[in-house]
Amino acid sequence: MQLEGKRVIVIGAGSGIGRCVAVAASEAGASVVLAGRKQESLEATAALLKGPREVRVLDASVEAQVAAFFESVGPFDHLVSTTSQGASGPITEMGAASVERAFAAKLWAPIFLVKHAAARIAPEGSFTFFSGFRAWKPAPGTSITSLVNGGLEAFTKAMAVELAPVRLNAISPGVVDSGAFWERLGADARERLFADYARRAPARRVGRPEDLASATLFAMTNPFLTGTVLAVDGGGPLM
Image (spheres, rainbow, N blue to C red):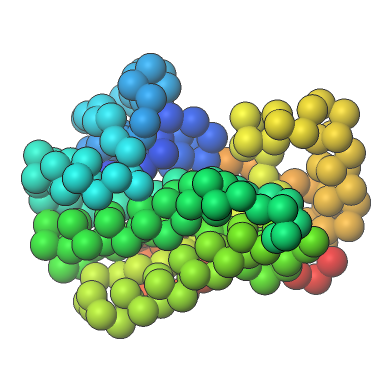
């Protein structure tokens, strides 16, 4: 999974899985463009990289910013986006603003990224997006999260056909200990959730960002993988 001489853009590189993907791509020899909304977080990721890197502040859900970003970045080989925003609660109580934020992060951002990057990506290049297990395992209160994850997976497959031979894939994580995302639950609830998942999942543990980073590099570098939703979930569907 070598990326020597390749230019890789990582959207969401400031933390969690995105940061781990950026580090792994750099270690594989890539020149990495770190993009996201927070300059300070991106700079912290940049400090972990030994190879060539650039830091670009970007809100991928704003089309004008995405267009300007690709005008300035120029040609590249691979793009990874971990942009995400959940929306939870009963549909009868769901506010429009929460729905719009989830749509912006998980649907509009990938649409804008593909739209404005398509003319600049190498013919043998790839896009890798992140969906999530709620696409196949909905639960009460997760209807919007299930909707946007499922929509992203469908969009990825459609673009794999439309943009061929450029490859597009989605990675569907299970429960991953990726840091700040789970802090909203509080420490006790987080540990209970992780322990329950580890007890029931065939892998007998929760995921780590490194698990997702290695899968992302596989998706980027395997020339025969496209239009695929790659489940990296410890066997979650078998629980």
